[in-house]
Amino acid sequence: MHLFHATATVLAALCTATPALADLTVEQAWATWKAQVAAYGLTLDARESRDGKALQIGQMRLTFAFPMEMGSAYASFAGPRFEPLGDGRVAVTFPETGHLALGGEVRDEGSLAVVLETSVTGAQGLMSGTPGEVVSDWKYDSMTFRLLDVAVSGSEVPELSGLFRSGPATLQNVTRIDDSHVTIDGRSAFTSYDFSYEVAVPGSGDVAAMITASGLAEEMATDSVIKLPRGGIDLLGLHAQLRDGMHLETWVTAARTRSDQSTREGDALLMTQTAEMQDYDVTMKLGPAGLDYRGRTGQFSVGGETPDLPVPFTLSGSGVDFHLLVPLLMGEDQDVALRMGLYDLAMADGLWALFDPEGQLSRDPATLVIDLGATVSLLFEFLDVRAMIGGARPPELPVMAKTARLNDLRIAAAGAELTGEGDITLDYTDWETFDGMPAPDGRASFQLTGAHALLDKLIAMGLVSEEDAMGARLVLGMVSKPDGDTDSLRSEIEVRKTGEVVANGVRLK
Image 1 (cartoon, helix red, strand yellow):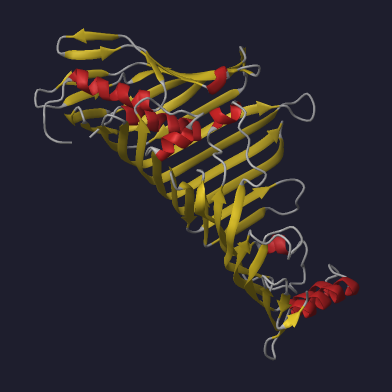
Image 2 (cartoon, rainbow, N blue to C red; image 1 turned 45 degrees about the horizontal axis):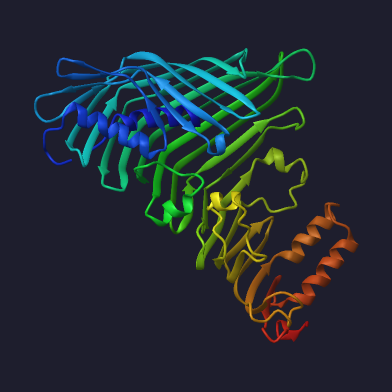
């Protein structure tokens, strides 16, 4: 799915660019394309020819060379035709049908070659603006990619098929070019797209196993801002380019997505899998502040069936969210974040019955949330790959965590619930108080409800022994205290820079 979708998006993006009303020549329109290609670090090979006032581009080949002569990747397809409309705009057209060749090779590993049949209907591309700021508008009624051939290191892969289809879509890009950077502001809207593929893999005997998969997305939209150096991306020196302003932002939403997969060996079903989610919303930013990746979904469900389980597997929930923030450049006091949330997670009764046939455990939907944060200093330029190839090595302590935070902890399942929060600061001037680690100073608080009742039920079900349960209760008693008359425990943990560890006012160390 990702290969076909990415290819469609890239090809459509190259057909677009977007502003001020002025006469744009066909040469300037083509120059915008070439500037985009160069900024991505690609090499372009294409023949240009004039046809009256129009400019026809022949077969295009885009090549990306991997660093250190490790190999290369390529894409080849029929080039566009640029034709002036006489009102300052340039029309961009592609053949309605054609072929897209993708592939590459990695040194000492082999090669891959893929050929796709392409078809597009109702396509219209328009470019306007000035050479420094070009607006591209692109739309089509349908676009199809059909897999024709796949070869690995020269050997054709048999019994492999694939199809990607996109319904009506609109795309717009504004390409701004200055002395140092190419900036592309883009947005797109797809009514729908779907994909399917089938591949044969080795089975348990002489019979091959067939994997069949399909998927779809509805009402998908993207927004992006890409700022790249005009000379192209330097994978061995990303640190310098990021500091100089290179960044990437992309936002993808979809009203609904679904995927299905099944595996069969002859007539025997080995496995089926399904996944569906509503309100998909994901954002990614890459820039001087690091990698910021976050997202959420609405209602979701996953399911499957396998001979190893007597009942189908089904799981559903009201939503998922996540956040990952990681600094990439050397510097002091940078933020780190890690969050994962699963909400109202529910299993089908048939699955519950496998280990709790009498219904002793609470089957209320479960929730899991963990939200962590920190402040760190990076003492080494990890993205300066060229320097590391030249012999540069990180110090003994390349990353220093200055602070750490538990912003939120929530685990609710089987009738019990654990919540917590806390923070800590590390003192790197004191390595003696805590025997060779930076002296911590902070606190954390936790609340646990329903734990004793859950242990009683697990004992009754035979899942936990009396001895194991007693050990668990002793540990809980050491680090917590009753909170009221109900089955509720509270724990306040303090770690002091003087070397003391205190739990609920009682010194443990």
